[in-house]
Every structure is written in C-alpha cells, then in structure tokens.
Length: 301
Image 1 (cartoon, rainbow, N blue to C red):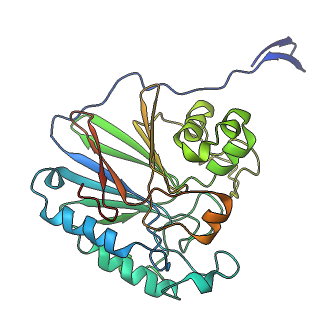
Image 2: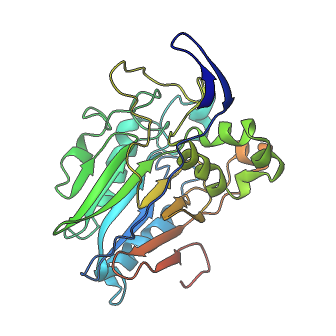
C-alpha cells in the first residue's frame, strides 16, 4: 500500500497486489513427463468409463510417449460422491461411496507401478468441503490407501519434483473459487470466462491467493498461516472443477485447468456449461513441450 500518515493511521493512495513472477525456467536433464487428470466422477451415471479405459489401455501399451510419464496428478472430484446436492441419488450408477472408491482403485491399479500418482480431493470426495481439505479418508477410500504408488494429498498442495538441486513446483488446487472469481470480476464476467477458465485462475497468481476474498469459498481459518496463500511461485498451477481444459502462461507459470471424464450433466445443461471431456495434457519436464491427448469417442489421438 502507498499512502501517507503517521504511526496511528495511514491514508491509502494506491493498493499494489503481490503478483507472481517465475524468473527462472526449471528444465530437467532427464527426458520425463507429467500428466494431469481431474473430475473423473466415478459412480455418476454420466461417468465416461469406456473413454477412461481407453486412457488406461494407452498408458500401458503406447511405446512413444507413455513410457516417459513418471508422474500423474489427479486434481479432485475423483468420485461423484453421495448427497453432494439434493436428488443426486437419482443420477448415480453406484449408490455408495465405498463402491465408487473401489471402482476408482481398480482403475488406478492398472496404471504402471513406475508412475507415481498424486491425488487431492474435491467437493465430491469423502473429505470436508471447507478448505484446506484433508486427504481422502481411510474409511470410504480404504482401497486407495493400499495402492503403493498413489500418494494422497490435501487440497491445495504444493508438490515439488526434484532432480539433483533442481526443483519443479506444481501447485494442485481443485478450484472451488473459480466460479466466484468469474462472478466477482467484471472483466471475467463479460468474457464469460467459464469458457476460458485459465483466465480466472490467472487472478489467483496476481493476488497470490487461491481464494483472496472472504466467503469466496468455505474455509477453515488458521491463526498461524493461511493455507490458501501462494507463498512460493509454482512452475505449474493446475486445477479442476470447471470440466474444461484450458491453458495459459502467466509470468513464467503454466496454468492448466483440467478436463473431465463425465458427459454433460442436467445441471450443466441448465446453466449453459459445455464440458470438454477426456483430454489429458502431458508436460515434458526437459523440453517444456505440452501435448494434449484426446480419448473422447471417435478420436484416435
């Protein structure tokens, strides 16, 4: 803040936000990749199980790109949940959380063991809705806790991948605040940013906070540290929630909003949200190249 005054009060002339800048690009020497998935919604009657099985088949049989993938990020809403909204039971193929997580575990067991997976919860998972969300619990998600190459993390989480002294930082956040960013910021509202949600996520970096306005999301206050503050500038900020793949670069940080594995729901149709399902971004940590794989119906790549 710029202003004038004394040790009792200040008249503010200008407010400057922290903003974000990643000054040095991190490139690994090893030719490895990370891939990002979100909003699988296992258990929904709109879940695209056949398409997700195509992804699992690809990651096990592709000889060119898949062997380079060493890390997989699952960014929330991994199952559809139970009782998330009134009348949801009519829209479920699997009626219990236990069944949903058991099927999700069967999916994940098909992913090669040499790939390390990170998974955070979203609002549909078996974790409290208020942020920061703890890891998916051991009661309903018991089978997930048995998977040796799966690391369950809170929402949000900063994951640091290391190679020698190099650190590649990936901030994963499911993204509950995105809708309110769009509703509250005129520029985003006018451009209908639900169709280009990475532009809303860019404001998280500008404000250095995943939910900078009181009541933007439900949260648990912490008197010692605000867990929604972006204290370290990430190399990648990845989110889910909006069911649309979108990509932006902002001052050295790559922004990725995740696709989904669920066809358009009745609610999405009502509010005019058109999902963009079955897309998997794959980022090469050596070259910085980003490839988008499409596993939707009738697509070869």
